[in-house]
Image (cartoon, rainbow, N blue to C red; front, side, top):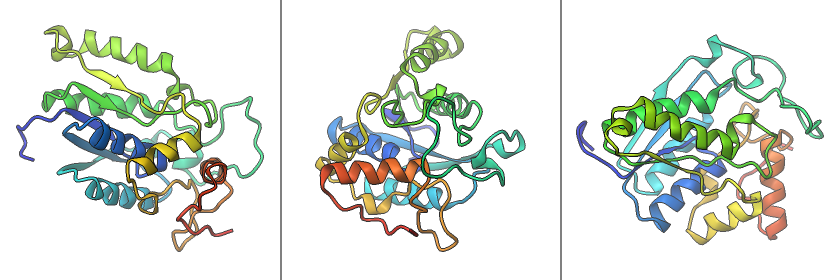
Length: 230
């Protein structure tokens, strides 16, 4: 896609289970012309960026980009530092150490800028509040508020060309998300969900992201195509 071509939707694509399913929904269910954005933000590993590229190619995306933003310079998260990633049974009454300060706020702002330059009217994000750990930037209220911010703070919004934030997975259980992806023909072996993979790239099997993913496949009676380190 050339620099000045338009698209229908911009999809935030981490290469994980949720964002990959959201992209499959946008491409194969809605039929939108999608551009995808991944973020190299100083995370612990680059495996998810490789997964994002694989998923974008598999779903026929012509414009997949990696944007760089140094959130590791800000700190405050186990995902951008040497702080240990919490494993197994965690206290769900507190926001976990894997929360990255304002990550979705920053990513959506950059995606909105990209969408405006492409005349895209939709931003798609695979945020989910059912199985996840209470991240404040995954709540419906946040996306409603951000939509209003786009109306007030962008040329497109001022001129009446609204940018809608699509959250197709927001109220789904992990098993329901996986079922959606399988129905859409998504190959989950291309994805990567783990916060703390082993040196050879295998998912740890014990971080929150791995646990929710494994539970989702188990509830469906389906095998997860990934091989876990333990």
